[in-house]
Length: 166
Image 1 (cartoon, rainbow, N blue to C red):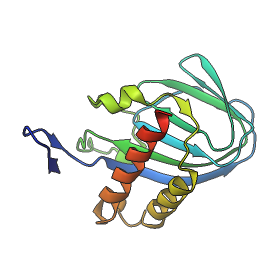
Image 2 (cartoon, helix red, strand yellow; image 1 turned 180 degrees about the vertical axis):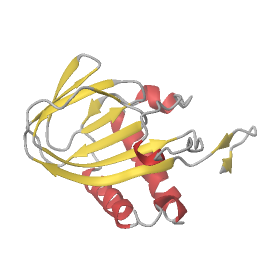
Image 3 (tube, rainbow, N blue to C red; image 1 turned 90 degrees about the vertical axis):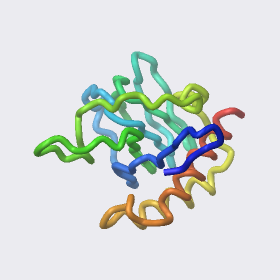
Image 4 (cartoon, rainbow, N blue to C red; image 1 turned 90 degrees about the horizontal axis):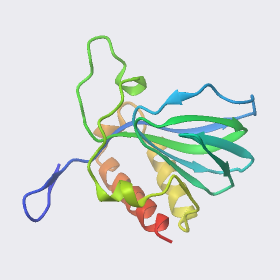
């Protein structure tokens, strides 16, 4: 947890998952409701994604930003890094696997999330690959306990916000 000027506190988000995905085209995936903040960095193109009724053709190198409560499905092959974040740090419900919960996260009040578009092409491609690779490398036993995680997340979010502006 950090304290900014003016006394506002900020807590590094909880990483619910950070993974590398590589799947073949299986037609449209079932429509789902996004429960947490999800960032996806596509390493290959050839995929379409529907988010809240809008269709996006996802090229190689694109970042996708999904927010809690959005409705999403996709088709085409998938090769990407993905990270799922929780800014609420809410405790798990009895019997709940917090890392695969369907409980929709309360939106985090931040001007940053209003700046980032649903899809954009970042300029810091190699930096994003490096950060995702490092995060995936520390995913076990608990990525949130590793001292490098807050720094890597801060760098990742910074690059995503900066790159989404250009």
